[in-house]
Length: 322
Image (cartoon, rainbow, N blue to C red; front, side):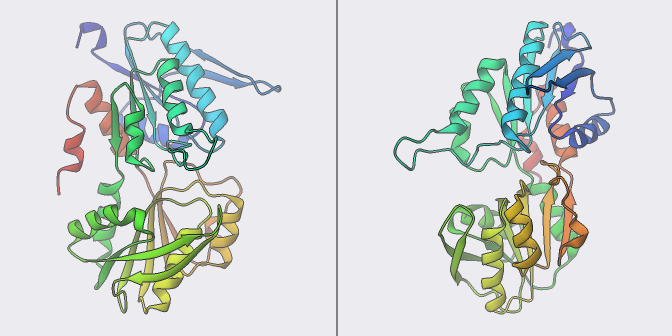
């Protein structure tokens, strides 16, 4: 790197400021100064206070809650940094909003995940860091480097610390079978898969478990839950098949109002473990849930990825320590 880039700068949008502050704490530095305002008519204004000319700059912004506002804010921040002559701009997106719209599965529908990729590049991103994308093919939507982080090391550490006597990893649907298989290999335990049929945007009918979960501590792995439909249906099926306990692990928690109601009244989970890629829904009180909610922080993982990106070191090494 040139002498101008002997240090890096970290800014944050307003979507998940607590996570950005934890990342800055891990890096041993305060967040760099930026002034963001939202006018009464809905427009966003941004002024970068610290000079960025010739600097290596990272912007942390999750695509939830309110993905439209979050992304527009990120685009405006990056445009300000680009016009301030930053040498390199890396968009750090802990949760890639619109990731579920990654293919054209009906006539005349958009591929919005690709649109977001195009807009990020047009707004000035030279590189993107994202975590647990809903579909791996989203990486191919970018013509700039993308580092795909996984919450797996943090989740694995938590699972191992529980010392469950008879664990089994369960994929809540067939789409998550590959990820669940990877967890089962690393944990040295069995694997089961729940076959499901989605009957609506927020409703799921689970109809069989492939594998034996009787008397096992179920470790259910998924990338996200918004309405809780998949997890609730799969947990019910595992209980009916004699599971000793059911613990669900998801990287992203973009909880909806319907999801709050379902988790309060319709789920048979013993524990739901989520990360802090997205702030908890406003007004949501985890203490009222009929099961344990645990939040794990991905700040050390993101902070280390930022440090390694700046120093041109391998990101992949973060996930090759098993």
